[in-house]
Picture 1 (cartoon, rainbow, N blue to C red):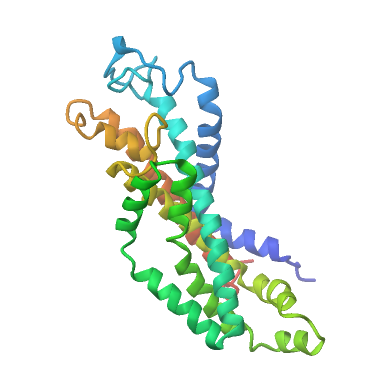
Picture 2 (picture 1 turned 180 degrees about the horizontal axis):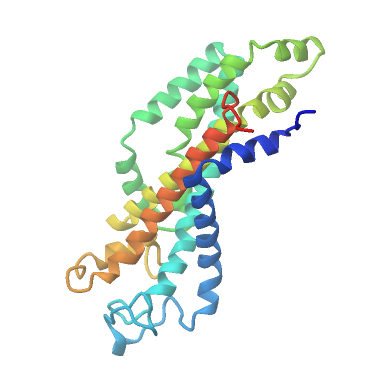
Length: 285
C-alpha cells in the first residue's frame, strides 16, 4: 500500500530539497532572534556616547568596533536590524494586502472596474518611485511609520497585476461556476474559493517584497531621506560612515554585510517557496 502524503508533507518534501532555501530559513530565524535579543543582553545602549573610545577597531569588548562618537557598533547593528527587518516585513504585508484587494476586485469583476483599476496601476508604475520616496521622506522627517506607509504605497502594483491574472484564469473554472449556481455571494467566492488558490504567488511575493523593501529603506536612509538618527538603521549607518570608510572600514563592513545577507537569504527563501508550492513539481519518493 502506497504512502499517503498530505499537502503539508508534500510541501515540506519539496522545500527541504531546496538546500539554499532551507539554509536561508535557518539564517533568517537566527538573525531575527539576534536582533531581538542581543540589544537587551549587550552591556551598551545604541545611543550611548563614549568619546574616549572613538573609532575603536573590532575587539573582544567591541566585536564590531565603535563609531565616531564611541558608540558600540554591534548593538547599533542589531538595533538597526530591528528597524530594517520590521520595515521590510510590515511593508511586504501591507503592500501585498493592498495589491491583493485591488487585483482580486479587478480580476473577478472585470469590465469597466478592471479597466479603471489597471489604468490606476499602470499610472502608479510609471511614477519615478525614488524621486517620490525622497520628496515624501523629506516631508515626513524620516519617521518609521511614515516611511513604512510611503514605501508600501509604491509597492502594491506588482502583486495587484499578478493576482488579477490569477483571478482571470480561475474565475472561469468549474468550481467557481458551481459556487455561483449554489447561490454563493461574490465575497464568498473571492474569499473562500479564489483566494485559497492564489496563496502560492501571494506567499512568494511577500518573501521577495521583504528584501526589496529593506533595499529601498536602506537606499533612502543612505541618501538621508529615510530613518533619521539617532534611531539606527543599516542604511543610515552606512550613510554616516561614508566619509570615514577608508580610514575606518569596519563602520561599513557590518551594516553592509547585514543588508546583503538578509536580502540574499530572503530571495533564496522565496525561490524555495515558489518551487515547493508549484503544484506541477514532482515529489521524490
